[in-house]
Image (cartoon, rainbow, N blue to C red; front, side, top):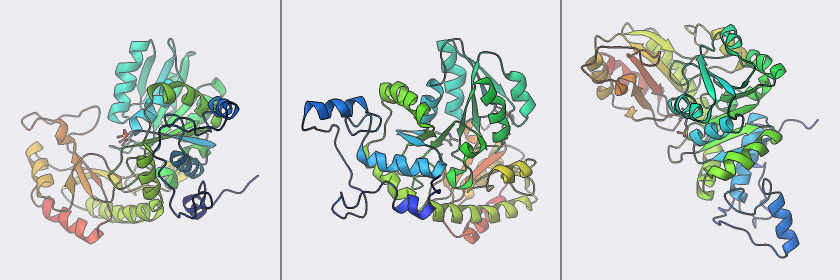
Length: 392
Ligand SMILES: *Cc1c(COP(=O)(O)O)cnc(C)c1O
């Protein structure tokens, strides 16, 4: 068996054709919609293997192809497809696996638009969905039916950082012919590779760590070639939610520094978590693998632990106190998304009205605040949090 390439080989060599690119160190942006052939026979051959050939850019493009190879190698899967968003990657992965009459089991608190896809759209096409507390393997086992075809996972999820036991999910699914799809955006392939635990399809919002510069929206679906060919002939080609060659090139640029960015973000996040966990105005932190994480053992068994994203519950009397805290921060931008170079804050309170009595929304506490830790000095971020906590 071929040895797994090193990170350096994947990021700097795999898929690159520098000799063919006249020595260019970075790949050309093949900004072309179509590709010409010298003969009908050559055109026919390319058209018949569109999955691998540069024929039409909705299917394949040489700049995108370099990215596909690197992403598949990072996840340890046979291949990868790149999409115009993480939502498109999730939707394509789900839709390729199900048809009318099928049943899907999903984690109870998935990413918001994954929830909309599963809860609101699949039933319109005759597909039933159950959301279960998948921290409990037994809850997933109990939800399975003879017509279950897919288990949708997100470990950890990106608000409350709940994990699923990936190997146990695969062990439940495989013998029953059920496929598993895991959103791995939180960890990136550097901290967790679900395929190694038996998961079939691995999705990413590449908008987050993979690109990492808050300048591209993109998605990735990794898995065995046979399944990705189904996705390609189905949702990929028919919905056409592809990235342009320029976005793929930006992603290649972002990917080169993934190991350095992630290392810095998670080292700073660990310091921020320790500071918050010890602060009297913080009732709870959510960070995979932290001493306070009830699923710590599982987090450290199937992954390398937390990334740069964390959340915590503020000891706040009301929503106004949460707003004061967030509005007072100087070095965290109030913005959605995460995984970029810049530190961000996102409070659950955004989804609530200031005068509303505090509630849980979709099982998420109203006083939850999420931080994405960027590349700034951790001392700067902690000092900023300390001064804003005074205002709670
Ligand atoms: C952002 C996000 C998505 C959606 O990705 P887009 O690139 O915004 O379409 C999916 N899953 C998780 C966990 C996310 O954070």
